[in-house]
Length: 542
Image (tube, rainbow, N blue to C red):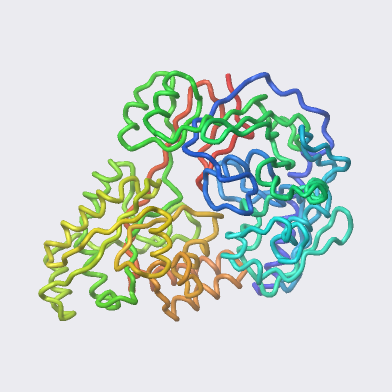
C-alpha cells in the first residue's frame, strides 16, 4: 500500500477507537469516591510540579500522572496510545497536519489557590505548546526554564505551528512526516496546563508558582508538599473518566532508603513501594500480606564504547571486549537473577525487536585472538566508568565494573575504574571523556525510535549517544523509519538497523532487568508501568 492510503486507513482506525473511548463522556455527574487512603513509599522528592521541565520518574509519578492529562495518553500498564483530552484526531494525507478534536465538559481542578471559571478548551492546548515553542511567549519570559524532552526530541524544530481552529479543535503543523509524533505527544512534557490559571499567576507576578502549586484536569488534586517528607493529594470528584478515581486520599511518603521502604510496607505504613533492592525481593515474596508482581523491564543496561578513542574505533576490538565479558555471571551477581541476557539495543517487549540476533559466546581465548589480529596481542590500558547510582537497568554498576575489569584482565586489557557524582558523570560522558561507560535506558514512549535514534543516531552524539558512534548506513535506516508511517515497513527497517548494530557493536548490551512492584494485598489493580513511573488512577483499596 502507498503511504497516503496507509495514513487514511490509520486515521479511520484511530477515529473508530477514539469514538469508542469518547463514550465515557466528560459530562458525568460528580463522582462519589470511596473514603479510602493509599500511601505510596516513593524513593525521592520531586524537583517540582511542572512536568515540561523534568525527565525523571520521581517527578513524573508525583505530578504527571496525578494532577495532569495529555491530548493522548498511554494506557495503564502499557505503551499503547489511547485518546485523552483529545477524543479523536485526523491526520492529513501528506502526514504533516494533525487535527485534534477536544473532549467537551472537562473541568480543571478547584484548589485553595485557583477556582476555574471555564472548562478545558483549545486555549489551554495552544498555551501549553506555545510556551515551549516561543521564547518570547509572555509566561515563558516571566518564568524562563528549559524543556529538555521537548527540545531533545527536536519538537521545537518539527512543530511549525499550533493553531486554534475553534474552541474544541486544535491543529498542529509539522515540518516533515514524523511517525512517532502521536507517541511523543503522550509523554509527560505534553501535560496540558490551564491558560486561565497561568494568566492569573502572570498577573500576580507569580509565574514560578506553576512549579509549586499545580492545576490540571487529572485524577488527583494537589493539596500540599513538604520536601523530603510527604505529598498529599485528594481524589478528583469531577474527573472526566467516570469511576477511575477510587481513593479519596493519596499520600506520597518520601523514603529514599530502600530498606526503610521495605520495613514500612511490612508494617502497612504504606501499601505500595518503589524500587526494591535485589536482596529484598525474596524476603518480600515471603511476606503473607504483600504481593510481588513482576515483568520483564522495558529497559536495557549496557556498556558504551567511545568509538572516538583508539583502539575502540576498531570493530574487532569492541567484539573482543564484548566476548571477554561473562554476562551470565553479571546477571547472577549484579541482578541476582532478576535480569535477562540482552542481545539487541532495545528490549524484547518493544515492537520491531529483531529476534534473529544472538549474543556472542563468552570466550576469552577467541577474544585474545581478535585482539592479536587487531595488532594488540599485548593488550592495552583503558578507563571503565562505573555509575554512582542504582537504576532498574543496573542495580550495582560498581560490582559490574569490577567483574568486567577482572574478565578483561584475562585478555591483557587493564581497565581503570572511574566514577563521579551522578550529575558530573553524565556531564563528562556527554563531553566524551570516557573510554567505556556503564549506562542504560528505560523506554520513554513505546516507539522504536526512542531506542535506535536516541541512543545511536548521529543527531544524538552530543546527547544520549554515549558511544559517539555515527555510522551512515545505520543512520539512514533510522531516518527512513521516522518518516514512514506503516508499522510493518518500520518494523522491517528497524530490523535491518538492529542487524547493522550487531555487526558494528558500538555498545555491548548486557541485561534487561526484571521489574518488581511490591504492593499490599489490600491494593486492587495496581499495574507495573513499563515506562518507569507509577500511576494510581484505577487503583483501589479493599
